[in-house]
Image 1 (cartoon, rainbow, N blue to C red):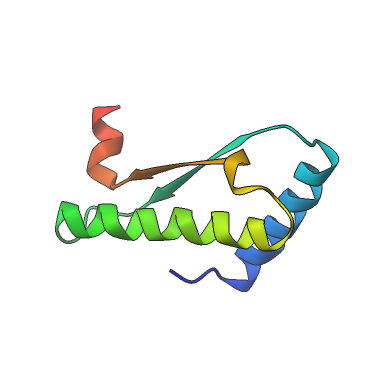
Image 2: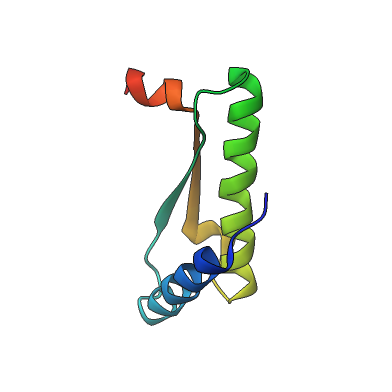
Length: 79
């Protein structure tokens, strides 16, 4: 999954804040809409969340500090 330039700017701010607050953990939740098969949407939401964790790791954030969750739009109704 790719991250937009606007998304990268937000993640740069997030990484800077996390570096100041060492030891803190965050949760990244990948989302999709309800178009297509649920399995495909969950795989896409997983790829999106993992892209965020990978980008944050490239900025010095330990991967263990970023918990991932993956949701398709239909999952949001059930939560």
